[in-house]
Image (cartoon, rainbow, N blue to C red; front, side, top):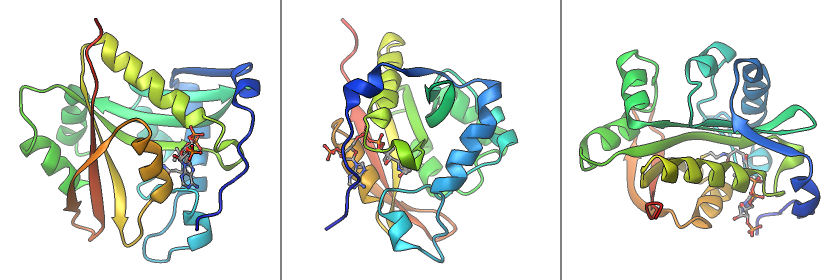
Length: 206
Ligand SMILES: CC(C)(COP(=O)(O)OP(=O)(O)OC[C@H]1O[C@@H](n2cnc3c(N)ncnc32)[C@H](O)[C@@H]1OP(=O)(O)O)[C@@H](O)C(=O)NCCC(=O)NCCS
């Protein structure tokens, strides 16, 4: 049984939060949150992993290179408490071309070869909410904002990759399950980590 933090009042949170496109000035806070939730897959701290985790965190400079319309922050009282970093297909292709996607080869191969080339899509690369702000629907707000942007741009598919081995990111699997993501395939990156690819198809805006 996974221990869960107490669910706080989401309405209370709604009063003071701000979800917006990530700005240059936010990358230091973003890198700090990513570092806070990062685990080392070769030396797993199960206690830390329980609330979800990131593996491939980046430094400030690399987060800066990934700023785009689908990189969003969640702030409260002007402090960044969480972020979601996604890319559309064109932006992802540019990152690959520039050699910016280092470890995620199995995932990228899937996105480049196993998806109908005519389909536009969003790849959700990272989401992280700082520890004290978890389970207050911050992640939900970031995901909803992403889906709403997708809809307004006529993009119907989103893919995310969630670690399955050596440890399953159950918090993240549960989280995406709430939005209707389905598991489509397991892929292995060259570093030996096994990832589940999850897919969501959303209705175009009428
Ligand atoms: C996963 C994460 C983004 C969720 O954000 P959040 O703001 O805490 O989540 P929300 O309050 O919007 O949604 C809560 C839902 O997420 C899931 N969830 C969150 N934490 C969980 C946990 N520790 N165990 C199981 N499910 C969990 C559940 O589905 C939960 O819904 P429920 O309470 O009705 O069961 C956040 O926990 C996080 O940043 N984890 C560390 C980084 C991470 O794992 N990123 C994903 C990498 S693939």
